[in-house]
Image (tube, rainbow, N blue to C red; front, side, top):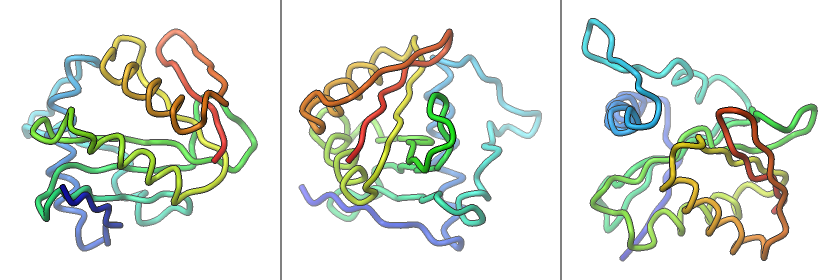
Length: 159
């Protein structure tokens, strides 16, 4: 299996918008969002990925086929006043799950973007909780901190 991460260009934004709709649809099992009257979930920060420093939109390909995306941003829930990286959104299409794609992509992102990280997930998103706990603990050899509030659980670590 050949897994690649490609940094998306602004001309690729329509592709990311379409993939984001798949992601948002699937994510409604955790956040109960509704679609607009136009039939879209939308994503308020899509343009920011080409207009704000510290944001990186990646496309995931497996054997040349589109398999998902990962969005990195500098905004964190629990860390303040530090330069950090955070997973804004992370989506691996169902077909490519449970075979190492997500783990490879997460670890590659941590390696490409050295520094302080915060990765959060909603409390009720049990698959994300299990995935991030396993991947981050393995990547950091257990050298991480945790934080939480009423909605989110976060992992804080450095690469």
